[in-house]
Structures are given as structure tokens and as C-alpha cells.
Length: 171
Image (tube, rainbow, N blue to C red; front, side, top):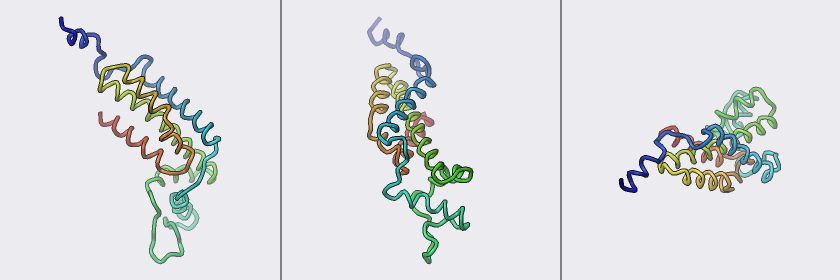
């Protein structure tokens, strides 16, 4: 029997889960991302850059019935990234603006944790090697490249997480 045949016999089959199941790693990576949020962002959502262009159209819709960034301009402009309203508007319907922003940031943090676990699962599925799972979980889970944006009300974190979740759903 060749080494390759022995490898195929002992290698996990596609679709098998790493030890403990996927839910365990989602919870672990979410806990790690929440600790980053508390450490890097102090647990407080930050508005910056063009955050107002994301939130103003929703606030105008709720206050004046018009989904537009600036109501005094002759041409309507919905602002940048109008898709964020799909997440922010339901929160804003039931919560005050500050609480809505806190929930939005919490969603970003949890989606980032989910994305870390799913990316590690993808690495495991593609390679059938538990070392790829651990490496991917460690690199994406501990990386501040995406996590540093979680406490900002911006689209960077949600975009990166959505791409990973979408890739996982396609596989």
C-alpha cells in the first residue's frame, strides 16, 4: 500500500467536521472577536469617516418618510452603501439610535466570528488537513486586519464577513 493510499484511508472525508463540531468553533471565534471589540474599541461603537452617509437616509426615512441622505438637495441621493439599511432599519424601528448602533456593531462582531470559523472549516474541507483548519482559524481569528473595523459603524467588517459566509454557502 502506498503512502498516498494510507493518507486517503486516514484522511477525513469531505463534509466531516473538525473535533467538537462547527458550533464549538463558531462560539470560540465569536468570543475571541468580542474580546477584540472590548479591547480595541472599548466596547463602544465609533462613528467615523462616512458613517453618517449610511445612517442619515434611514433616519430621514423614519423622520420624514423620504429615504435620502440630504433632504434639502434638489436631486435625491440615498447615500453610500444603501444595503446597510437592510440591517440597520429593522434595528432602528424598535430601538433608539444609540442602541441600534450598538446592536449593529454587535452583529458585525458576531458575523466576523462566524466568518472566522467558516473560513477555517472551508480550509479543512479543501485540504482534508486539520493543520489547515487550525492555521486558518488562528490567522483569521487572531488577525486584526478585519477585527479592527468591527467597532466602527462602517461596511468593511460586514463586507468581509459576508464574502466569507457567501463563499461557505456556495461550497
